[in-house]
Image (cartoon, rainbow, N blue to C red; front, side, top):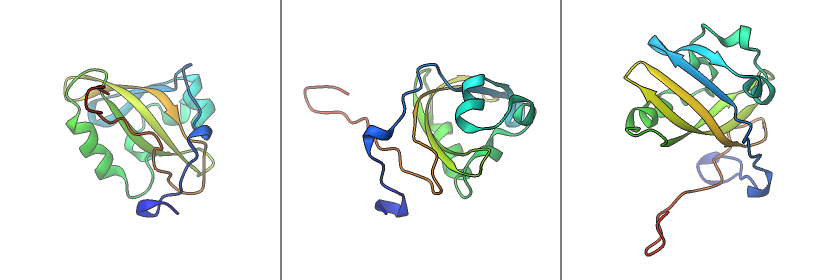
Length: 135
């Protein structure tokens, strides 16, 4: 196990999802869209999640942390990492670019995800500023 009890992930196993997994929510977190890639990666059919609360798809014990991270996002294009539960009960950590529309609506589209696993895995890639190099 890695730091914080998370399973370490080999960066080579991160699957890039340029045919982007995406979903959106509106008032009180109700899912309004869920695309085919989200169905494929996370194993939840659109008809099973649309009109449900998006935080119900987060791994147990992570809701508060994820909502705090989302609250800090101020600009379009900022990213957040969400540990989500698949339809098979596994965990898939997804890095999303976030687009907020006011305080009650949000659109997420992924820029990568870890393979499903029995435990929450820490996102293996970190974006850091490097002196003289930017990010």
